[in-house]
Structure formats: structure tokens, C-alpha cells
Amino acid sequence: MADVLSVGVNLEAFAQAISAIQALRSSVSRVFDCLKDGMRNKETLEGREKAFIAHFQDNLHSVNRDLNELERLSNLVGKPSENHPLHNSGLLSLDPVQDKTPLYSQLLQAYKWSNKLQYHAGLASGLLNQQSLKRSANQMGVSAKRRPKAQPTTLVLPPQYVDDVISRIDRMFPEMSIQLSRPNGTSAMLLLDIWSKSSYQVFQKVTDHATTALLHYQLPQMPDVVVRSFMTWLRSYIKLFQAPCQRCGKFLQDGLPPTWRDFRTLEAFHDTCRQ
Image (tube, rainbow, N blue to C red; front, side, top):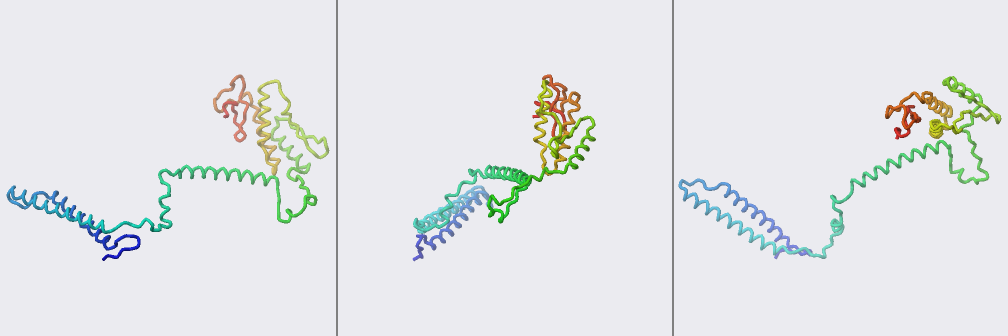
């Protein structure tokens, strides 16, 4: 009597069934080999036909015999018990189909999110460095009353340094009139009248662009570079009515010259062409 496991599978019948499958495959292969070889090794046509039919019938009988044996053994193998614990292998059926899993789109979204996070983290780091915020474990325990008030040291510059920077900028742009005054003692004021509203539309647009440029050129650690960069950008308007638009090549569009100047290249563009 063959050993039967608690799972309900007859291992001896299972091994015999595997052998029966191999024998069945061999019998089927012999059938196709017989059909491939055809009628051979006989002198007369009638002899070749009889030999081919006899050989073909023998092979078919072998296939039928092996198939019946495999069916008999399959009934002896038995079925696995449904109460057999599958443990973690039973969770394989819960895995999603790979073709229907949006893996690529999720990876792409995560990559974009990571790039945005890195970009905004860099901006936040730059702003925090500009403000010169300092925190330590000792400072966190000090009360707000005893904590010293932070002094704005970024733009506190000696008057001689400011005069030197303005004089150099004045020499760089001789065609522009730059005046420096100190109405309140040491605090310097650079006279650039770009806020008075003009009655001409072209100069109104230039004023709007200059206000935008003041917001663009911001570098508290190097104020001389900010002033020099802004003055260089403002000087590009010396050819306001002579420079064509770099996009369309026209001097006038809707009756106005190109009033926009690029912050990096100082190239002239119309408002509609720069977008």
C-alpha cells in the first residue's frame, strides 16, 4: 500500500504518473516519426503500404495504452487537502497584475515631486541664509525678553564705501545723471526718478518694467552689485527708439517701440513678443 501523506497525495502513484507521462510523450513522438519517414525499405508498393500501416497501428496502440495508464494513475494520485495551510504563499493570488499596475506613471510623478522639492528647498535655504537666522539649543531656552534683538547688519555700510560705489557707477555711465544725497545724516539716497507717472504710454511701460527690475535685482550680501546691475539694465534704454525687437524684428508694434529689456542679455522685446 502506497504511503499517503496527510495532505491527501499518493506519492508513489504520483511518481508512476510522471513516468507514464514520459512514456506517453515517447509514444506520440514515435507516431510523428512514423508519419515523417513514410513508406520505406520495401521493393513493391503493396509491401511498403502494408508495412507502413502495421507500424502506424502499433504506434497508435502504444499511445492508447500509455494514455489509459496515465488516466488510471491520475485517479490514484488523489487531491490535495483544502485545509492544508499555505502560509504566506496563499497571498500570491492577491498580487496585482503587472500589466495593470501604473508603476511608470507613479515613478514619473515621484521624480517630478522630488525635483520640485529639491528646487523649493534650495530657495528656502537661500532665503534663510540671507536673513542670517541662527538657532542653537542654548538660545531656545532663553526667554524672549533676554534674547538680544537682531540688528540689520547686511546693508549697514560705511558712508565712504557708498560714495565710492556711486562715483564708480557714475563714471561707468557718463550719459546718465546720478545724484547722491543724505537728508538724514549718514543715510544715503540715490535720486532715480522712476516713480513719477509720465503722460506718455511708452514711458509708463518703462516705469513699470523698471519697478519689476528693482524687485528682480536683489542681493543683500552684495549691494554694490545690485546697484551696478540695475544701472546697467537701465542704461540699455538709451536706444529705446533705435533697437528693434529681437523676436519680430520690428521697431514699432501697436505704435510702441520694444519697451522690455531682458534682465540677463539686455535684449529688446515688445511686451507681446517676450512671452
